[in-house]
Every structure is written in C-alpha cells, then in structure tokens.
Length: 345
Image 1 (cartoon, rainbow, N blue to C red):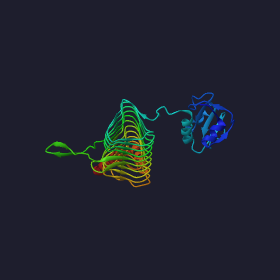
Image 2: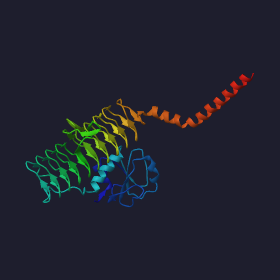
Image 3: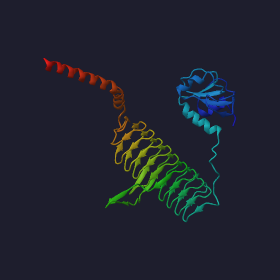
C-alpha cells in the first residue's frame, strides 16, 4: 500500500504537522524505520530516537511539538498506530466464504453462507455458526455450540459441547473452551470425579489468547463478559464469572466460582483462590496471590495481596530489616552490659 501523509492523517482523524505529500509505503519501529516508513511514538523512553530516526513520518501525542520528520498527531497515538496497521497490512487469516471439502459437518447444523470453515475442521451435530465467522484449520466444535457473527477461531481451537460465543469473538490457537472443571469428591482415600454438566458463555467482542483453558461449569455457566481481553496461557476454572472490559494477562489462574467485576485488570502470574469476589475497577499487580475478596476501585499487590501502597511500605520496611537487627543486637548487648555492671555493684 502507498498513501500520502496528508491522506493518512485524514483517514486516521489526526492532525498533520509537516509535508502532506510524502508517500508512505510501510511501517516500522522508530529505531529501525527508513525512508517511506511510518513510525510511532507512544512511550516517553523512546523520545531519544526522535532526533536520529530516518522515518518519513511519526505518529505522536500532542506532547511532541517538533521532530525532523513529519508528524501525525493524536491524543491516543497507540490507538492510531493500530488503525494505521490495519490500513497498511492485509489480514492474512481472512478467507472467502465456504466449507472446505476435508471438513466434517454433523447433522442439523446452521452455517451461514457467508461463513468460512477450513480444512480438517470437525463440527458436531446441532451447531450454529453466524455470518462472516471464520473457523480455521483443525478446529473442533462440539455438539450444540452456538457461534455468533464475525467470530474467528484460529487453527486448532476446541469448543466443547454447548459452548456459546457472542459476536466478534476471537480465540487463538490451542485454546480449549469448555474443558471439564477440576472437581473431585474424596471418599476412603480415593478421588471420585464430579461430572461437569454446565457450559461456557463468551459475550461479544472478547478476545482469548493461545493455549488458554476455560472450564465449563459444574452446574450453570462459566461466563466471560463483553469486551474482556485474555492473554496467552490463562486458566479460568469452573463457574468463574468475569465482568465486562476486563484485562487478564498471561499465566493468570482463577479458581472456581470466583467473580470479577467490570474493568478489572489482573497482571501477569496473578493467582486467585476460589469463591471470592473482585470489585469493579480493581487492579492486581503481577505475581500477586489473592486469598480474599477485594474492594472496588483499588490497586492491590503482594502475596497475600493487600492495598498496593500498604504493601510497598511493608517492602520498604523489609529492606531495612538487616540494619534494624544489627541495632537491636547492639542495644541488647548494651543492656546486658549495663545490667552486669549493676549486679557487680
């Protein structure tokens, strides 16, 4: 694709500072960009590259007032960067509608004529697939699943029986939706499996990364709220409820029957015990362990997780422990010597 800086700024709804006739042919990082490239700058630690970059144009925030290159200015440069990528680079995973000859389709299925079903896909009985949905190679869609419009299942995704997906859901390779919840009853030293007969419901505009496991409910449903984004390698146990517009980062584990409110952020490697509630707008910092319910509108950190400023004070105090121990030992020694002198008197 080729586009002038003036036309690009117009398409992106951004302000142009510089030459509107420069022709752009691609995108690159601000460090490696060359002539014809569009770069972007959203993090202040990369400001140092403004003077040395060879990019023909740079997407920046209004804080950047001048640079050697032409500037495309917007209050949300990272968002504009995403829109520009869509203009410059075609989506290679999009396919024309149709059902590949090697796929296996069960009985009583309703598959939109605008949908795509790729090679070696297995679709069991009673499945519904909405308009413009793409089910790529090697996927398995279990009996009675419902998939909305404009969804995309990347290669080797598994949807177990009864799973329900809203519109515009994206699920990346290797993820299993509707795997059995981890439930056992112990009798006489033996573990007896508890049947998991519920389902998973994923609402509109959810994106789930690769190699995640989302367990179906023992009874009822496991639910992922509208607009939530889930990173790779996340475990979501049975009967978990995740609210709208949450962010769940890589290697998070959420135990059974835990409920997350709306706009919750769980950073990498956070672990949550079961049967607790996390309030709206909560942020839990990386590698925290959450063992109780958390109040809304607060940030937490640590294991066990506490309010982040409290935890930071604890950590600051911990760093002083060696010196405090030396002082205590010194005082103890002085006290012993003083008591010894009194005894000798």
